[in-house]
Image (cartoon, rainbow, N blue to C red; front, side, top):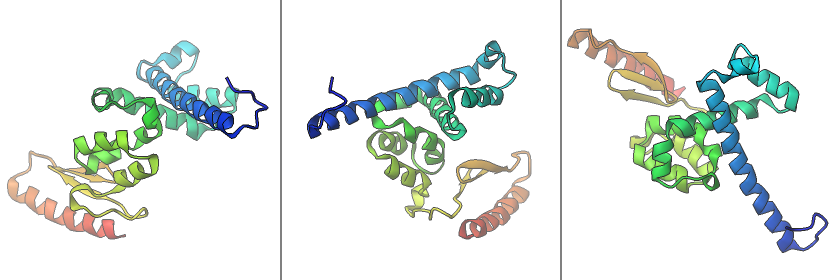
Length: 191
């Protein structure tokens, strides 16, 4: 263990690096815990009526920023949802749990295997940029532009399902609606 009063650059650097490893592990652990509390409704056992109430109480008691706690929750939820895929590529807390909230968006516009390889190997900044890219088109979306993706009968805007065309419609009506919506969404993507 290094002394807190050390002025040796190597000791200080080692202390910083060890602290960063601990922070990454803590973020993943906090996220995992928050996600479990939400998933299983354990906030009720803590005398809260909702997850929002639990997070508000947590913020008040710990003086933590609400945005950080929600971000940790998203990290935990993404980790739980994609745990098998993450473990398959060897993702660990050292690979940056802060990338996990961007997984859904990346998966909406990119190939699954590319996403999980990149979440393991890219820096946070690179992965955010990758998640915002338009995948198969090869063009990166400008940070202030919306991404519109067609997946079967579902239209995704910024990786989130926005419109779903009923499969019960006849093919002529469905085809017409898809053309109209594609034109409208292409306009939206240019805004």
